[in-house]
Picture (cartoon, one colour):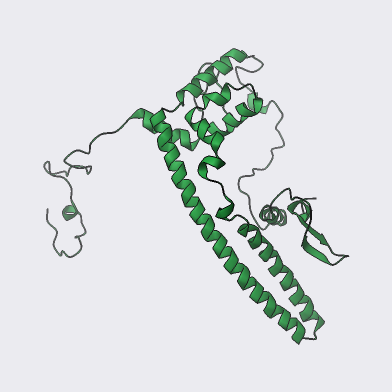
Length: 281
């Protein structure tokens, strides 16, 4: 089932002579994703993130020997600790405005990058079309069935590469929305993540967990969520809260030299600076 390109919006049927023909239905996945699946199924890519399944595990394996096994935790305790955690990552208005400016700048850079990728894809499509034309000329010039079959396979490969590139050209920055239009919920969320948690919709609360934290939240009965890993925007926002800043001392940041109170400089290194033949100590 995973080998069918039908889910990517294309039809292949050997009996009818169809190969990767665009279909009329809406694809469930992109063609690029489908190719990644085929590479994984054929073993052309290695996924080191997948560990082998152990044969001696049962559903209670993580709890063996745990002192809290089969002990209940009050819902109010779990939610209360989570609310305290959430209030701890609540950014100040100054910090949220700073991070939004950073994200907006990153969005503009991504638009420039996407525009460059579209131009490159269009240029590659032109090269593939020229290459396909050359292969067609070879087919017309030969009478060998073996060569004709090989050339036809080459044309099929070229057409598949062309389809991938055409899919990339659809991601033109001209079709993109502005940063404020694309992420209105995210912008509001960064300024006030508590608003999603206070919502009555379970979808909003799940969105909060996905946006504010990088993974599952391990809970400790006594300490709450001591190992919670927040997402990168909130890590950056936390730096604004600490206000851990200061002036560089006049002596510099280099360590003092062993002899006296002088500061190390390039003149004291074993290798002479450029343009100097002697070393002074």
